[in-house]
Length: 583
Image (cartoon, rainbow, N blue to C red):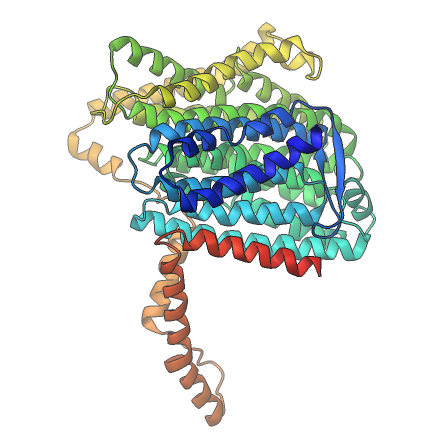
């Protein structure tokens, strides 16, 4: 029965994607797509198991373990909610069949990653998920979406190359790609630091840790709302799952990598929140919020690398955070679409506003929500880190302040009734959003009733309540002060201040501008005097070969932006890679 559920979960989305190409307008097909992730939800409820698939890749191992079960449950639930939400959100979209095609391919890859128990199958599913998501990002074909898609594709391919090189070196050093053996053997390898550097960089791109985050704040605003929800709620966490699979966590202390993770994590937490406060698109604000939250994950990984004996506590805290962040962030992205519709009544507007506020503040650790349990768990798990104790003692509460300011910015931008609504409020959108919003609170009390979570993380003691509340109160006071000052200042000063905004993608935009500027000015290397024959060859390359290559690449890129050719090409590429690996 378990194997049937496993193969059903992996095969059904691929079969439905094939059917979408021929029967795109079938109402029955639309209902099946909405339920495509349901086998994954059922599989997350079965006991742990593992199967060998000798004919797939390099003797693949698939199954469910304790860690993968949590990731699978959250991932499948979010894809199920996004499928229902998308059926209503894109009901009048002429290109919804294209969205459905890429949606199903990305879902298959994302669910596959959670059950992969070896490096080869993990990378295959990871690649399918990452490449298929390109079609979701460029769905509306706007200029901003096209640019975001190109940046995403470049960074994704770069990350895939790093992961491929890292796994090849890991296999060469350890003789295995099975995760249960890989991390322990890698800890003793003389090339351990090189392999870990490649793997951390590759997974860091998917996580969106600064400075590897450039794709994330560009892709989330570009993609349709249901796609943004799974991009942020489920897909970026595959980077964390990859780290948990391959890093020697709890086995050996790695102070150098620990310091790198702690520094990058804390900088990511603070800088991403500050940049997000300048954004005008609520989805861009949420994207930077995700980047900031990934900083907290990186801090926890750094803590585990410096203090291996604390890994059981840190690992449990990370799993609590995975559940909380996935549910809350998906609900907030769904809320963007709901807040932009016409409200049928004042009561509906009040209820939706209350749900948005509750879910937003849960990210900052509001008591009585899963965010409180996650923040408390992270606080306990990162305690007693020797030289980092004093820094973390004031930096972690500061991240709660910046997170509250960031979600306050989000609420200001989406507040129901502030803008003219468009479209009707559909039950197909409200039900998934409402279910996730209620889970933010219900999940906290479920954690209190079961024994898998440390009881201290859900205890509403006065000291813990005050530690959680005071950063939120400070941030709310700061946000209120800014609003009052903005009303007092002259209009021209307010307009000037409001004009300040860091572009989505912050570091990527100046880099792209510099590259185009260099191309326009045709900079050449003149420091070394080349022989005449070499200069002629260089001139010929610059005047004939390079322009033609650039034109060909540009045509290929643009052809991928028009129709289902992109998805079909990606599927053929994945099949070719599979056949090559089996020979």
